[in-house]
Length: 251
Image (cartoon, rainbow, N blue to C red):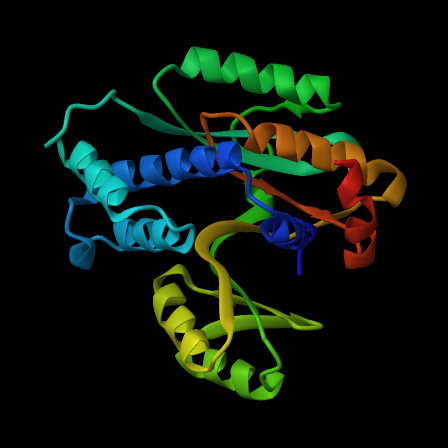
């Protein structure tokens, strides 16, 4: 598993404060709104919207919030015009970072991102500077919960899984984006607990970061994810799970 995936798993297990939950709802609602705007409000005909709605359900977003977000996207409810942008840069230890944002003011967002990168020992780069190090994939992470890893893996493979990695009771499954839904369904049918399922950007090359430097990298990533305009942050650092567990209280 990539270092970023491991770190996401650790944070997922931490208690979510009311403030964090509210911010998470805002980010998911924006994804629903944009998906509905670009592909229509019917999830049966809009793959991106189906994924966004499933993500909203995974974080227990109320149904009325989901419906309002769809209506904002389709124009039934007036909304501020938002645009999606991707920024690229480098963090400490040469870690490649991509940031997906949704904003109503790109100048404000660019300025804020540049400041956060610089504050934490990184730098914002040009378009294309790190994108070549990532590829678009479906990713499902789940807890085996005592289920037989071989049986679960076979179910995932039959549903279209491209790569499977297991560490302890954690399973991470990579898929072609179009196969994400059926792989998730197969894993659920196999009895495992889904922790996250999304179309994401996975690194094709990774950078090993020492325990001495990883805290600075994680602080940058967390600072970026805490920005209201930021939807997703991708990175290519690699570090052992036990190191992440050890330093998690310092971030």
